[in-house]
Amino acid sequence: MFQDLLQPKELILSIHSSILQIFKKHEILDSVPFSYYRALKRKKTDLIKLGLFENEKKRLNKMGEKNILPGREKYKIQIIDLINSEKSKRKKKTIRGN
Image (cartoon, rainbow, N blue to C red):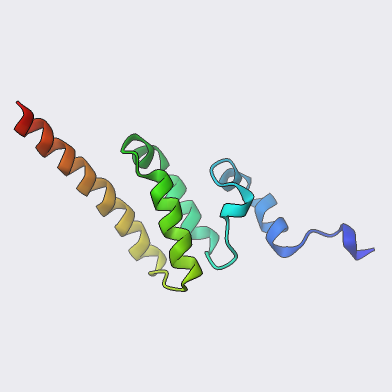
């Protein structure tokens, strides 16, 4: 009777199907709140353009596994800083190359 009910993680995954468009089911950890995945998803385009998205997914999950996640707002700032830092590096390379 109860076997037809979704498990908590599966229920959450079905609710957050937009997260599943970016992360494979095995990449979503119980130790990482969905709000972190959403924060990463919002910056996906910038991170992909800079070649940083896959590494950031791994970094987020490692922090979750080790139970060292920063606060969600701090994590959002870290992502923005990462993007800005990489853009700045690339801009400097372009200027030096000319």
